[in-house]
Image 1: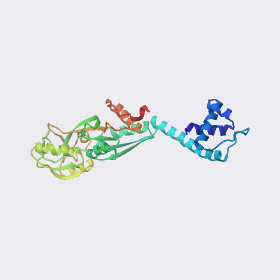
Image 2 (image 1 turned 30 degrees about the vertical axis):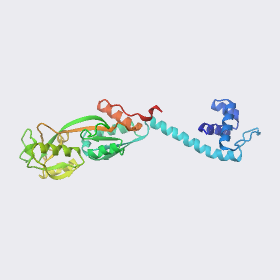
Image 3 (image 1 turned 180 degrees about the vertical axis):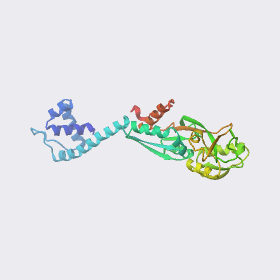
Image 4 (image 1 turned 90 degrees about the horizontal axis):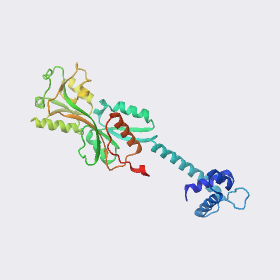
Length: 307
């Protein structure tokens, strides 16, 4: 049975005539008669009395009519729904984003996307980069924003767009205030307010401390930069934040000092799996973001576009 059989059947009933239905559907009368006959053979019952001057339904025909109307309506609704998805009027994108990305271009970019595509739902999940990378890998997230390049570059496409050096923030009365720059060795006696362990920057800072000959004394681990600055302002330790965030801090409460080479960079990148089909909405978000950032977009798995 083809959906067209039901559509032709409904049109015959609606017009009350095979000839009028054929004219409306732009096919010949023998063709529409053949379609109805085929439908009756598939169902195994007659639907229309053939000896009536006007179309008259059998009891089976009346039952099929009620169901056919629902089926055709559902099919038409599905077609419209798919058309909306294909033309990006609807959809959902699951994006993992680290808290630190809130001070970058992302909030205004997401706002602009929402204005242009109000029926595409963006679901944001706030995690550290390690959990985001795992979420994209396992399929729980469509797209991820990570603070450093992913560890498994062979399975991810990567669109890098921010490289911002970290600076150390200290209390305005701290001994290092006034230095144009400091190296990691100078931080050996300090207590650190550090990123949570699921942040990739956690590993990078630990590695730099090790290269400088010490293990950092961690007083607190957190995912919230506001809490970091509050802890530093309370003279409880030092913290490391990207320079763009540091430029917006109140120098009366904390002071930012550049770190000497080799520096640690916040390297924000967008990642998605190379081998996984991306929805129309997810692809459009990537294309929109690429255009806004002025960065060429790698090849995207376009999946069912050819269907």
